[in-house]
Amino acid sequence: MAGRKRFRAAVIGGSGYGGAEMIRRLLLHPDVELCRVASVDFVGEPLAAAHPSLEGRSDLVFENVAPATAADGMDVVLLGLPHKVTAQKVPEIAALPSVKVIDMSGDFRLEDAAAYERYYGQPHPHPEMLADFVYGLPELNRERIRRARFVASPGCFATSIELGLLPLARAGLLEGVVHVQGITGSSGSGVVPQATTHHPVRAGNLRAYKPLWHQHVPEVEETLAAAGARDLQLRFVPVSAPLVRGILTTAFLELPEEWTGERLAALYRDAFAGEPFVRIPARRLPEVAAVSGSNFAEVGVAAGPAWRGRRTVTVVAAIDNLIKGGAGQAIQNMNLVLGLDERTSLEDPGPWPP
Image (cartoon, rainbow, N blue to C red):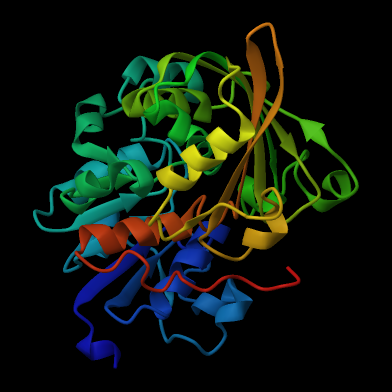
């Protein structure tokens, strides 16, 4: 029964697509009770007004309350607010001494305030708080997340790229320039239609945007440097695709010729052995349809022929941008900070066909 659950949670910024996924996972959670959903939209209306799939699933309504009010009496708060808004709101939540915070925005992912200003277009309003947040990639920072009070969940593209390249960074093989293309579904652009993201211009179309200047670039570089990459320079081109959910990233790099496909496959299998949400397909490369609707990531690696002592290596990774790339990973981090099994409410494999 809900009243017997061990922990109380609030979602702040719950009317968007990420909020929908957080709410859905919390309503299914056996140990965490969703007690409040704050939003400036749909105020006073039931959750199903924004999220039709939740019809009849909860008596909660959207509340337009201050973040500190929403967080009062909670064990954990999950933030689904936009970039640049979150940074303004976190200090008042942090003033509550016991509440833990899981943030899905980009406002506290970077250690370098100058990089934040360069990629997000304005100075960080609270750079003194950047060091308080642990970067929420469990496959890299699991033990730090368990001890954290504040967690910055990774971005969607960043999650896919980082999982793909993490084994190489840890093995000391990731150095210099790496080229990555990332293809993403439309839900990553949010619930409000824009001139370049709504259906008439997205369906049947592929479009590159923010080439080499996407805001996830410094996040990936910092994270992989912490894992062992040296002088990493990410050259990233994102592409919008006529999908609703999903991200497929493809990275290209050069390695010494002794790194054959078989040797790389063994490196990746060992790197992700025991990881509950990372799969290495045995008979195919990763694909979006295999992970859509789930918190699972797929990673695969392929090696080309040797030439002049080097060989080109391609790393492919696929995730659902709203789940492992967003709300699902936030729930995974919430489970860790609360001392719960990180898999709780996240183990469903997603539908097939998608």
